[in-house]
Length: 480
Image (spheres, rainbow, N blue to C red):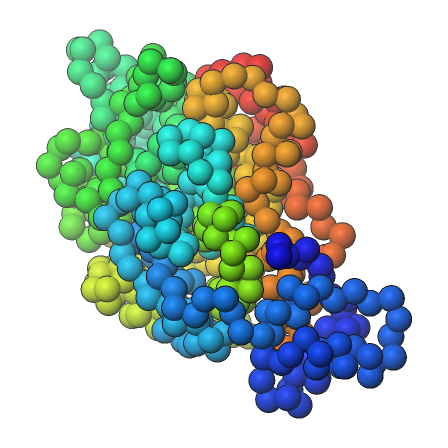
């Protein structure tokens, strides 16, 4: 039976929470649950069998989730290491994957139950860009977390083009304006200006394209004939797995890259490159990774999915917990856990640069950046339809979506992929159990669309309710 994903009214959640404490377990029978509701003497309450079933045994207890060695896999790692999966009766194995394509293929083939995914992967797969499969997400792993790094030589040339960059603490955000003359010179000399990103449907691909295009640098288009996305390109963007970024930069194969942490900080530590901007400055509080499963897996394991989401939500909150002064209290422990060779495998001192609320651009330029990684606050874990639509607009802007689409298509497609109704059910179960409060989640009448914003590096306004107008607002990009 497919879940109806009904939310409990808050009053019932309170009653359930109190009753469950008395039971000493969150796993009770459907009859017991109905008895609790009956004893409350409240009329017109609907409780789906599926909602009750999340308090029963999950359909599958032994699970394998995939991840890539990046700090934003943290909710999965913390859910395992802090026992949140165990609390849900889930025996979870986390397995590092060699690259994003292998990870996606293994989820589709059923070798993995779910995975830490690029936000664009469920979207690209569902609309048929690359491997075709219906992937859904009911949980956003984080906001922000990426940076753009250039080689020391390119940075020195950027400084020559802009005297303000010669400061030990240059003003941020740093645009690509000072990079444009360098790229133009490469073109005049018939040389490729090569930069790296992690995958064609990665946030990194769209962020570096956004940053370049905002300065008048064409990052290239995807066409039916040019699946590499280099048609008319001033900069050649190619795929490099995240852990290999620093070595590829050091070898001179690429001159810069966009990647998640800790691989920008690794370039600083190794003295081979300079991060010039973070994606927080490209788009403030932008979505980055998600937890993805196939739609079929969800249909077969709805209670298991809910139990997984409950554990991840708790992990996200743990990661973002602060003291009375606003200091992140658990991030150093998280950095230590993530440094394990079975997880990110980088030095704790490298991981904690960004995870503990600072970001090192250069040895002279160390900045507080408490929101570089956000896992729970600002409703970061909620799967907003508007986030999905932004990715769709960028896919269309750069030609991965080959034909013009209607406004309704964007909204309908987002609803096929992003599943806030599942998230909300998991969240309300946590409220019922007294583990979180209702105020920590969006209001029940929230429609899944974040407010329109101009908090982009170019100041352009994004309104998810007008995707076509947004696409047409850019100087560089397809027009509909």
